[in-house]
Every structure is written in structure tokens, then in C-alpha cells.
Length: 233
Length: 85
Image (tube, rainbow over the protein chains, first blue to last red):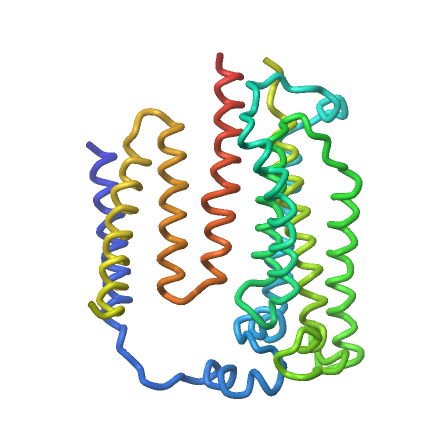
């Protein structure tokens, strides 16, 4: 009884809060304040054809660093609570036979998925997507790899080093922005280049490649650890 | 039929189906069914994001929401079942 009353109360409070949002909403014809600046001056200041990337990597680059840090913390906490030992990475897991279809299809699909992920994060400043999306796509490729062959041995050292080096390079590029350009994570440390080409928008493609590699390595690491934490039959 | 009306119809159908599937995810007694239903909700949500012209959010939702988190849920489910048995 008490539980139901509390639930109704919580729902009513939420309804009140959302009603406030709904009530205060009005259609606008023009952009306001800072979004106006981003939309009109963004292409000229940052040189990225994809305005979302300009905001995420340059104007709000510090937030992106925060997101990457949160993902790193998540991976660390998962590793802490799974309590894997060294021999867990060596053991073979008995599993039902994977289907012929999955095995054959994965051989064709995995390179394509990796290539697509790399394409997404290298072209983050031109087309939709970017480091996080590309990294997540690469991690789905790793997931398919693990599903097709549950006893696959991913090279743990490679994942670890890729992740660390990308993280450190991301911060170093950010600090170079303070020394050579206008501030932390400013992309003007190298020339902006021609608008709309692959090598344009200054440091954005480099930063996004590092973010993509870091996110991909981190999520693959999480998947690998969950896979190894399964007990033997 | 003009394309705007078609967009609205697709969006409403997807919204209703994902609402129904989220109820399945909450109320179903079998956890594996619930996990699959939650994954399908994410998949439909990613289609909705594309309709609202946010392809980058759609990419994240499709790969993390319906791909990786479903897999991780199954790993955790398997681990819990083994340690309870």
C-alpha cells in the first residue's frame, strides 16, 4: 500500500515537472544567443563541415574529455568488480557450437565493420558521426568476433596500449592548444585547410581518431572481460 | 501520399510498438525475453532518431543500445544464473 502511494507520488511529481517543460515551450523562428553564434560563425571559425563535431570537439571539447574520462572510469570499475585472475584469460570456455552461418558471415563482416568504424571517426568533421560512434561501431565488430568464436584470445596488451596512448595524446593535443592557439583543445594548432576536405578543420580529425581508438579499445576491453568472467560448464 | 504524412505515420507506429515492447520488458517474467525486448526498443529508437534527422545519435543508439548492452546483459544474466545454481 505504502509502496503504491509512494509510486503515485513520484509519478505525480514527474508529471508536474514535465508539465512545466511542456507549458514553457514555444515555437521559435530564430536561434538564440550562443546557438546563433555557433550556426553562423562555426564553419568560419572551426572549419568543420559538420557543425555538431565543431561544437563537440572544439567549442565543448572539455565536455568530451569528461565523457572519455567517465567511460574510462566505467571500464575500471567493471574490471575491479569482475575480479579476474590471470588464469581466467587462459582458460577455454565450453560452449554450444556456433552456427556455420555466424562463423562464415563474421569472417566477411568483421573487416567491413572495422573499416566502417574507422571511416566514421576519420570523417567525423565532414559527415555525421565521430569518435564515439566510430569507436562503438568498432566495438560491435569485436562483439561479433567474440560471438563467432567465444574462445578467441584478444591481445590484451595491444588493447591496453592503444587505449593509454590515445588518451594521453588527446590531452597532449589539448595542452598544445593552450600553447600554440587560443585555449585548451583549440583546433587551430595546424592550418584549417580547405573547407569540406578530409584534411581540414585543424586538429579535429586527429583528436577524433584518438577518441575513436580509445572508445573502441575501452568497450572491447569491457566485452573481453565479461566474456572471460563466464564460468566453465 | 506525401512524404511528410508518411514520416508521421512511421514515427507514430514505431512509438507505439516501442511503448508496447517496453511494457513487455518490464512485465515479462523471463529475463531473457525482457533483455531482447529492451534491445528492440533501442533499435526502434534509433530509427526514430534518423527520422528526426539526428544520424549520429542514431549510430550510437544502434551500436551501444541494441548491440553491446544487450550482449553485456546476457553475459551478466548467464553469470548470475550460474552463481545461483
